[in-house]
Length: 260
Image (cartoon, rainbow, N blue to C red; front, side):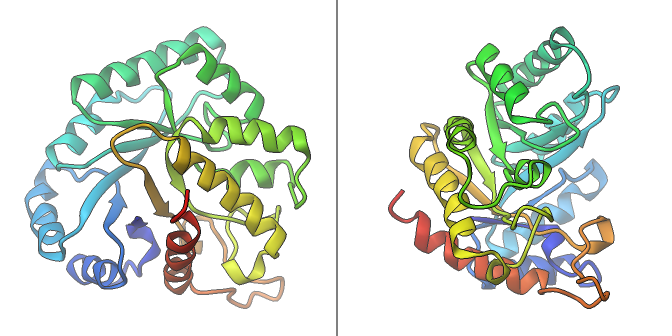
């Protein structure tokens, strides 16, 4: 169980943020691979907090991917997930990019998870199903909240959707544990109706139960409004608290994934 570093207040020194995550009961933290100049201090602080560290990043269409793998491996990260641009490109272009990422994963001995995300290679469910069918070794990081918002899915989800999403959950070595009521990418747990919660937790249990890799990673990736994830109601009043929501989700995940 990891926590996105962005779920903590950015005004707090890094060491205190990491200690806050450890004291809350998380096993690790997820963040962008540190640059060489920052790596030593970053690894020192992570070690003091007793946390594992996993990587996440975005890769543009023209960006070289290898430096990110190199930075993640050098920082001792246990895995790397990425949102990869190029959703509008044809299959040949996407296949070449995926093959490159899989090759880098093997070369650096670093598990790689392609993140399901709107406006990326995994823009929609149908094209993602085709992509994983063409690449049997490609594993995913399931951030299913993007698809539920794009399709305004509210419980009970149509059987066709549930079957397709479960199929993709079976390809996940990691989940980004965010859930919503079909309109925003993330909502506080208590604002999501129980039936909608059950749909998400069913996907997450499916992913956990079917993963055959060395470990399954669940990350509470609740992101602040400062980077576009507004947490206010229509009157502009704050809704929820990112850090408290992360802790609440941690408890719910541990309880409901225990028997997966």
